[in-house]
Image 1 (tube, one colour):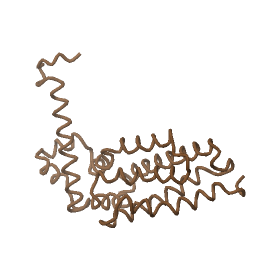
Image 2 (cartoon, rainbow, N blue to C red; image 1 turned 90 degrees about the vertical axis):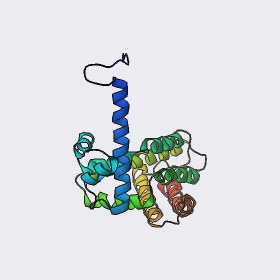
Image 3 (spheres, rainbow, N blue to C red; image 1 turned 90 degrees about the horizontal axis):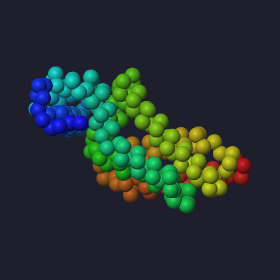
Length: 217
């Protein structure tokens, strides 16, 4: 148990942990701002350290590379976003189109934690850094597909979708629809989550009609 008393190494462990968390928060905030302002390629770790008020060596103590730092920026707040989706999977609305749209929209709504200009940098960097940041970003995409497939399975268990439907393939198609909608959402500064919902709904309805088709039974 932490007694809260100083030890030979310096401040109490609880204080050291809070200081560590605060430094990491400052690094991530600085990186988020600089990536959005001037892009990923034009931002150096030295600039991030300067914005955070830290030595560049301290930044490297927390993040091995710039792609690692960008990934941390992306993942900030993602746990809440995925938890919101998991809640829908556990107790989906009774109408399949509504259930699927609501799940997909958790991704769009959760993305508002970052400015759209930062998302444009993130999407571009996933292509520019395929062996580092891009690989980790694709893992996140796979988690979204898995969550969509879990929702489709729940809807099929209720008898709302054909038992013969290929749910994995359908989940991948729905992810493509989500990706296209999301890219347009971040490209247009005037677009809102309501705009995204209006774009998603007819596409999701068309896919659901296929999943219900007697030809699949």
